[in-house]
Structures are given as C-alpha cells and as structure tokens.
Image (cartoon, rainbow, N blue to C red; front, side, top):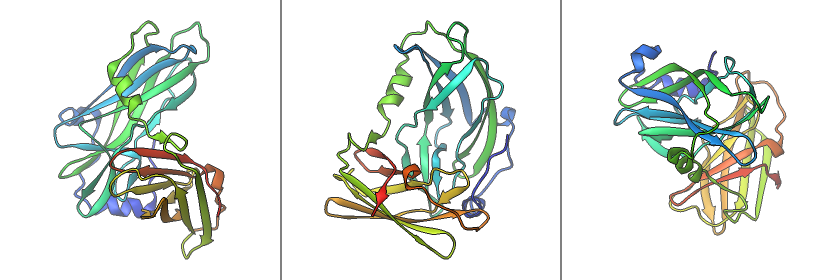
Length: 270
C-alpha cells in the first residue's frame, strides 16, 4: 500500500527533521496499535476501534493533517466478512511545529469503526495495514499491521464511547443556519471562499477544507469572523496542475474552535 501526498504538503513535511521510514519492529518504542472490541450495535453492526498509543511527547495526525503531516491511511484487503465500514474521527488538536501548523492527536488516537458484515452469521476479521506519521523533535513515517477477529459478545468499551463522544458537532447541532461557497479560478487551481452563519466555536477558530475528491487537496485556510458569520478561504489544487471541476455538495468544512469542532457537509453557491 502506498500513501499519496500533495506535492506542497510533502515539501512542507520534508522541511522538518525526518527519520527514515520505520518498519513495525523499529516503532515499538514510539507507538503501539491495537484493535478494540465494542460488541454489536442495536442495528446488528460491529463496533470496534483502532487505538494508537504514543510515547510521551509524540503526536500523530488527523485525516487532514495541515501544512505538514502524514494522514493515516488503511489497507483492509486482508480482512474477512467485511461489508461497509465507516470511521468516526474524534475532534483533533491544532499544534505548531517548526513554524508550521499541523492537526492531529497527542498521547493516543482512538478511531471508532462501525462495520456491516457481509454475512451476519459469520465473524468479522479485521486484518490489514495502517500507514501513518508520528512526530516529536523528528518525524517518523511508518506502518504497522493489525489482525483481530471482532468479538460480537464484547461489552461497551469505555475508550470507544469516549472517542465517539468527542466527534465534531454536526452543522445542525452547532446551530449552522447557512453555508455558502464562492468558487473562482486561481493561478494554480480554484479559489474557494466559504461564508458560514454559525455561533462561535470558541477562541481562535480554524476552518479546514476537504474537497471530497482524492485527486484534489486544499491549502491552509485563512479564517476570520464577521459577527455571526465565519469567513474562510483557501485554494484547491491538484498534483498535476490541470483544470478540474469542484462539486460543492462534496466539499467538507471542519471548524475547529476552543469549545467544539463542527463538521459541515456541502455548501450552496454564494
């Protein structure tokens, strides 16, 4: 499995002290990975989680890691009886590193996973590989394997419950009354400006754009507030520098604040 990085983000990462890619055996002192059991949900899906425990002072990255970072990626191809799978990402932290802003987790990362089995009468085996990055004074890209058969009779797991409780608010829960996006051509791609009518998420808010297309990526957003409206702008690019279309319905905007994170799916023309 390979991890794909936007070229500018990769350049930012390479500006940090970087150790060589580390195999699983070389990561034992930095990080441990395990699959947690959460039993069956009332709808008959399996609830589990990937837990990454980090050594003191180390951090790892969210799905949109900011200016410098390695987003986690997963290869599930060794799994058995795996139907639909969805990951819940708890609200991340924002931190500065060597003058660059990154987004992720310290101490540990617990990613709840809900799985619909192909066959409800057979067990689900999660087997695969996770690629990730961990950073402290240096950054270490690595990969670890996992192999675990989920326990349908397992009780509620407090770590999974806590991670689910830390999910970002939905737009409705956060009181978002409108979200519009103005899109215009830029020298390298598309310029996007979002205007989101919502109460403050607390402190210095940061908006993070995700274009919803794996071929595209967003630069760091400039975020400011004008009364009850949060205004965020960014540039959407692709690695090839070729023309592309941007689907507003697939754009995802996460607002990170001191009090809460807010997950906004799609925006209207504006």
